[in-house]
Image 1: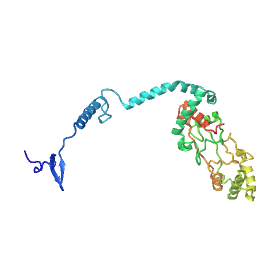
Image 2: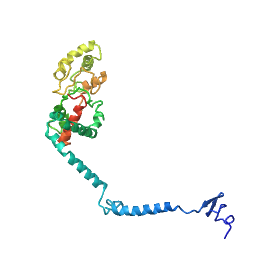
Image 3: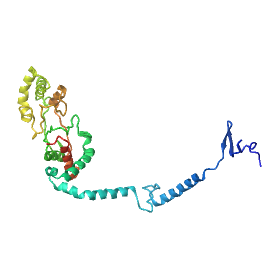
Amino acid sequence: MSNPKQDPKFDVDGVPTTGHEWDGIREYDKPLPRWWLYLLFGTIVWAIGYCIVYPAIPLWQGATPGTSGWSSRGQLAAEMKAVDARRADILAAIEATPVEQIPQNEKLMSFAIEGGRSAFKVYCAQCHGSGAQGGKGYPNLNDDDWLWGGDLATIHQTIQHGIRFEADENTRLSMMPAFGRDGLLDAQQLRDVTAYVRVISKQDAPSAASRRGAKVFADNCVSCHGETGQGDRTQGAPNLTDAIWLYGGDTESILETVTNSRFGVMPAWGGRLEPVTVKQLAVYVHSLGGGE
């Protein structure tokens, strides 16, 4: 037997090495622990069995189906079918109940609010925000300032048919003239009526310009906004006397609105969503706190 201390296959402690040496460092040649080998072979056997029983091996189209016939897509479809079956009765009840009567049934109301909340995140949050707080050009649905009205039936009508959505013949439709762009008012009149709107909205003190603007307003704006500027919901004309502005209440924003008008569009969801989903959206929006 060779002397371990002389044989390059052994280190000074008599432990076998591979014979490799680098900069005085030798590589041990020790066998792997048996528990590790058993685990390795076990996982190999398990992997082969898994590939036989479950979909696993990619093919040109899809994958091997496996002997069990199970798939994650199939499981999801079954779970969704079961959920739909559990929800079917209450959804049918919501669909059969007039939207303004849903709050009278606590169970329907609770379900409709949660269903509407989910639908809102998918279809409405992109414009109105995740908290329905809105933004410039997109109404805040949490307050009580409504262009067309904030009761349940009116909100439902707005969601179903949209606003200025040409593909729906029953859409909400209002059109403010572009007083400057179309030459209906000159530059001085535009500035004067802007000054008047700033006064009635309690942002500026009366001035010579606002007094001239009062006459311009009376001649051109009262038919929609009313004599006091408080608006008209039947026409979708906003209240100009409060502090809530869709496009901004500063002088430049008001002047831009009077000069070029605004033409915001909301889709008609009645043609895109199921009637019961539209109802749930109306109930949810109404429940946010600003509904009347």
